[in-house]
Amino acid sequence: MTAEIVQVSISPGGVPKLPVAEAEVGVMGLAGDGHNEPPWVHGGPERALCLWSFEVIEALNAEGHRLFPGAAGENVTIRGLDWAQVVPGSFLKLGDTVVCMVTRYTTPCRTNAGWFADGNFLRMHQDVHPGSSRVYARVIEGGIIRPGDRVLFKSAEEAAAALERQAGEHRPHED
Image 1 (cartoon, rainbow, N blue to C red):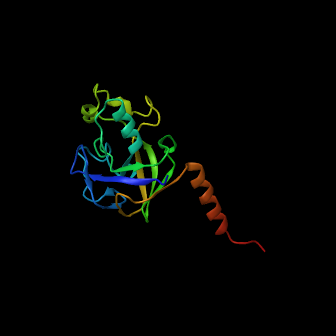
Image 2: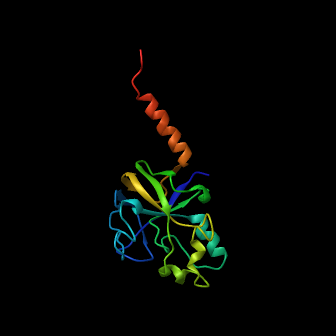
Image 3: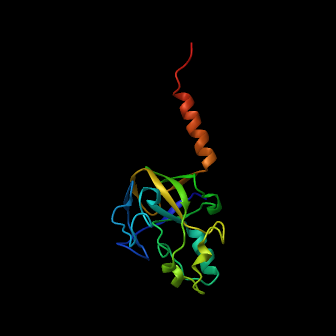
């Protein structure tokens, strides 16, 4: 199965973030997306994008919760990745041009409690339920993304090896 963007979501601030047909991605995130908190809490270049798995949302709904793409504040909902492998240091290419690096797991906020049957929003905390967390990412290359765009994944190890190969190709040859 090819990974793809299910939904691109923005809001002027707060949750849920609502679907848009496309969005321009820059170093600070999606054009038109806002936050109710200062950049050291939400947003900023190290937290420019919030990404989450469609399969995790489906699994949480099967447990009786009421989540949907954008509900928990993610900007990009992705289907088709082994979400447990999406860890800090891994890279994603979204669509034709956007490249981002996962910087950290998100810390769930009580504003998401209403989506959970028991109010326990820690159900999406990485330390409590590994592989269920949203992640933040830094934008390396910007561009336009849309639902249906393909998503390519490189683990931290694969990305480091590719960078090392690339650096070797650009080293001056010794004669």
